[in-house]
Amino acid sequence: MRAVDKFQNAFVKYFFSPEKKKGKQILLSPLTLISSLYKQAVIFRNQAYHKGFLHARKLSIPVISIGNLTVGGTGKTPMTIYLARLLQSMGKRVGVLSRGYRGAAPGAVNVVSDGKKVRLVPGEAGDEPFLIAQKLPGIVVLTGKDRGLAGEYAQNNFSIDVALLDDGFQHIKLKRDLDILLLDGRSPLGNGYLLPRGNLREPPESIRRAHLVLVTHADKNYEKIKSIIHTFNLNVPVFFADYIPVGLENLTSQEKLSLDFLHGKAVKALAGVARPEYFVSFLSQMGAKVKETLFFPDHHFYHPKELTTIDKNSIFVTTEKDAVKLKSLSLPECDILVLKIEFKIENDEKFQDVLKKYLPYKF
Image (cartoon, rainbow, N blue to C red; front, side, top):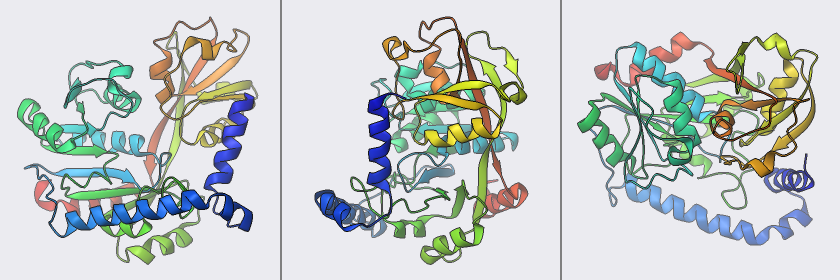
């Protein structure tokens, strides 16, 4: 790992940890003040919509939001893919509406996929919308800052009958029929502070808006996590889920490999995701010996100069989100393997029953 990345990781760990040492509190007091002001602004905005001073757009089709309280790393995109496939299997024509973070497409509404063909490249769509479109043939994927406008466009032009908001919990300017909130079981409330002092996007009290909570990385601490959630939303159904590695694919040749291929092999981890430590833990659990890590910020778009340490004598393993960006680069001849994962919900049948319960007349 580069020295700058080691420093960045150590700083973020210190910065976002829940420890409340006196020296740390003094050092970060300016950011604590800004976080307090930001918290009040978020509460004011949420109340303005709740009391009707600000009006949210309403679509004539069901809208399901998948979002979280913290910045990155809870599995919104895998959950969106899972839910889109589930609804598609029920005979629904699904549209996924995403902000398109870091995508360069300039339109108020951008068609990433029309359900037949992926129209944009990752740099235009954003890495996550592109990945969603690539993995979901037959499903419309649009990006735009105003998801309500994108939803109306999808209705009028593609006749969708259910809309999924990818990363939509804070996008309350569009009304939704079901709010699914994802939490990281290892730190469900982050470090207790809002941005920029912490990694919370809004106060924990916002859990009250959720119709259903899905917890990832729970490590079997189910009752403790449920008690935290029920402190804010007593009757909300809580489910647990995680990522399951399902295979490997060579980035260049697209050759499929079994997970056993990594067992006992020395590998280097290459990733630009919010929580790269989870990715490394996957590799270790599969028996790989992670000798080196090459980490970049979440949603990072790579430049060939940043990858000069890649050599043909090493085995690199990367994520699906990173793979969509790496494919467009001229890389040296080497083995870069893509770890493919799927989202698995415990008590999946019960989860589907709850889903239908909240939208009985629509399904």
